[in-house]
Length: 230
Image 1: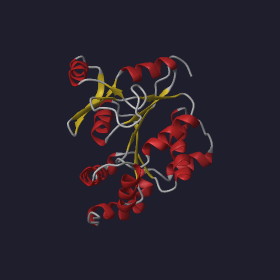
Image 2: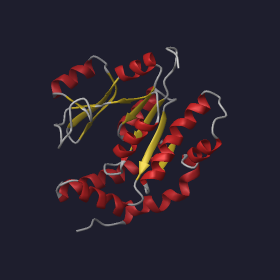
Image 3: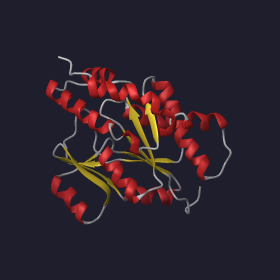
Image 4: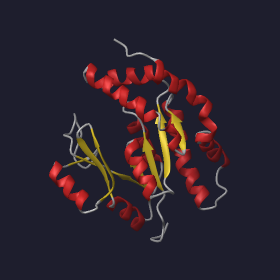
């Protein structure tokens, strides 16, 4: 890659508890020349989170100064806390000849697509609502109220699935990781006009929105119809 390289921007969105962070970490280990944009937030760190690793944790007034200075590609207020993607990560990726991976929510993804129409958007889904609820209950000590709020948010976010280029149903981690890697590599092949590895292209194509709609129906219905568990 050269300094003239135009980065491919990959957007990954998913409801909380879908396994997105695990898949992103695996992807970054397996795919070279891929930068990760660490988001800024005004919420306090949770558990073992470290500043500059999961997020840049800053004060609200500092975040608002960055908004005023035009330093964000996108930003949003989620449950009373700001989250945002700094422009500098895109500049850095271009300078280093790398592509850029953004881990952002549905609201931020729409902002990015408006500014960068060529961005590749990937939505990660749990196999159904019960699985998501089980994951949320077993990964943390969140209260019932917080878990219910996350499930309600997930239902709203999932309704935006059709705004994404690819849909990845995270049922089996190893298969999902392989599919995510295939999506990233196939987009590189396509844009470089390379014939590439046919198996990778086929694996990625299975996740295209137009090819996965039938598998989505029962997942969407599970979120619309399943009542909260006690």
